Amino acid sequence: MADIVRVAVDAMGGDNAPFVTVKGAVDATKESDSLKVFLVGQKDKVESELSKYKYDPGKIEVVDATEVIDMAEPPVMAIRKKKDSSIVKAMYMVNHGEADAYVSAGSTGATLVGGQVIVGRLKGVDRAPLAPLIPTEKGNSLLIDCGANVDARANHLVQFAKMGTVYMENIMGIKNPTVAIVNIGAEEEKGNALVKETFPLLKNCPDINFIGSIEARDIPAGYADIIVCEAFTGNVILKMYEGVAKSMMHVIKKSLMGSLKTKIGALLIKNDLKKSLSDYSLEKYGGAPMLGLKGLVVKTHGSSSDIEIKNSILQCVTFTEQRISEKISAKISE
Image (tube, rainbow, N blue to C red):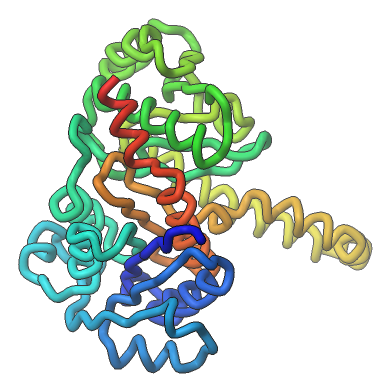
């Protein structure tokens, strides 16, 4: 029998908590036999929500946390002052070895600070990046970093490329994944100071498959498996991805509902269109793991659905079973 993976979920985090966090947790435990979920949050509210579902009581445990860190709170101060918050308590469970992983749709800032301060970085890791999978024409690519390190240095980006390589090889099964750095042109001499300094370091790194620069317009085509950048650029790319996807959905819906002819056409292609569009749904990939930490930290969108919460929890099982943290540690020390 496989080892049980223990996931501490911030049950109070996100716009729709605890409804989506509880439902996502219940659904995740029904899909995996190698999982135990700790729902960390205000006990009365979490248990009230949990009572609506049928579940294996051996797979879900409620851990009381009386405080909640709001999205707008200064993250460092919140982590220091709200010791009994769902975020802090769940992260300390990872720190103390009571849980293998942490999932939250709550405060991004508090999660990033807590990941660095409470969970802690692996030896040799300078910065821990957020690394979501994003859909492309060829499947998906890893965007690293998308929000954790706005002022990264060149050596940080090289570590991001190495961590991303471990992730894509072991989680996505891509042998020798390609790595590209986000730039404003394909030529090596282009870019800002950070890109110009990083490019030759990546080019001369023997343990990654560096293919050069990638322009933003080529990312959706899947030209590279791993997209390396500092967090400011990565976050802009991610938010643009999400915005364009929503806009396209509105445009398509408006076009299909414009006349009787298009409505008939929409009815005919409904199932095929739904399947195609589902491949571009970000929620199917779960949240963004914070790579390079001693334990797994996964951040999901504040507006996450129960499906995204479920997939984020299941993502923790694969990550832990594949011993990604150990492999990253070995890769960084090479």
